[in-house]
Amino acid sequence: MTQALSGIRVIDLTNNQAGPSCGQMLAWLGADVIKVEEPERGDIARQTHRDLADSDSLFFLSFNANKRSLPLNLKSPRAKDVFRALLKTADVLLENFGPGALDRLGFGYPAVRALNPRLVYASIKGFGSYGPYSDYKSYEPIAQAMGGGMSVTGFPDGPPTFVWPSIGDSGTGMHCVIGILAALMQRHATGEGQQVEVSMQDVVVNLIRVSLRDHQRHGKPAPRTGNQLGTTVPGTTYRCHPGGPNDYVFVFAQQQMWDPLLRAIGRDDLVGDARYETAEARWQRKGEVDALVEAWTAGRSKHEVTKILAGAGVPCGACLDTGEVLSDPHLRARDMIVEVEHPVRGRYVTVGNPIKLSASPTTITMAPLLGQHRREILQELGYDEAGIEALEADGAT
Image 1 (cartoon, rainbow, N blue to C red):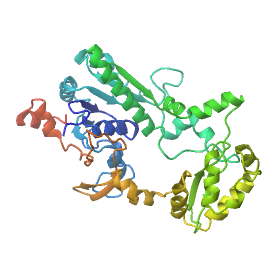
Image 2 (image 1 turned 90 degrees about the horizontal axis):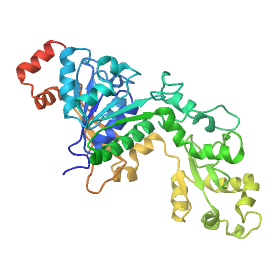
Image 3 (image 1 turned 90 degrees about the vertical axis):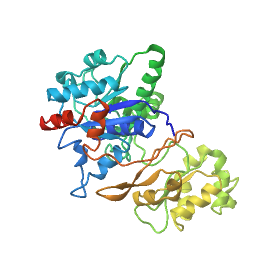
Image 4 (image 1 turned 135 degrees about the vertical axis):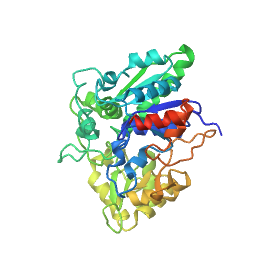
């Protein structure tokens, strides 16, 4: 079946997470994503938190599914010739090199544009290519700190807190996907590519817009409020049986859901009680309301609580731990958690594509072994066996 991005070729020069997550999403949508890596070592993520000596790490496998691998030593003149030939066939170049690194190799945007004016040149940087911080290095926690995310995360009496979901890395990758798709659409009208740049700091700022709004509303920095969501009560986490570290639910009951909540937890006697009838009244009696909700949740498992409250139309979610996520029947049914075969590791579990297109379904395939598609790609570029062997002997690939 033809997929949404069939016919689009992406050269993925990125490593670690932000760039690879972008390339993986494009691959899931049907693009031919060629991961260009250093010979011998490859993407450093292949070794990150490696759990099996002879296998690529699960970290690498999580961000490089559905791609092809071509090792190239971009410092080698012969490898540069291969790369130029590859660029001429490509629609997108994706990179997250340090400032000026690709220019020094001869593959900055002006040089690449001269080779292929239709190519979309996508760059992921910590702080962008201009501005006072453009030379600073960044990783996930740095982006969260400098983008304001940490200042609004945590409890009031604690320090600014790091968020484990990768809003700075994978969040940046997804923003970059949006930019690339927009540039490809514009190319239909202009016939030309363009440069796309996404900064990790910019992305975190974009994702904390609600907190920035609160600063402007109140004229002071947005506070850390722990798990309390705004002034809605109930609007936080509640302990469940048997009291383990993740035995909690989040309940969020707005005004129209208050009476259904009371009936669901067996407190019909409080329906119409003026002490709790309005959102403002419940906020003023937050401690009492939280206590009566938790008195009910504490005697039931988080899954039982979720089933009862969700069934009553009250937004409620069990706090699933990572093991529960991996085995969750709903996620399995939606192919969000899938199993993939690997020649070294065997069968392993990974995430699927969260974007479901009715006419472009995604089948998840394993991340490539280093150099797995070397010959295949070089042959597509017109190299015969003698030419491939010469490149290998020269250390170009």
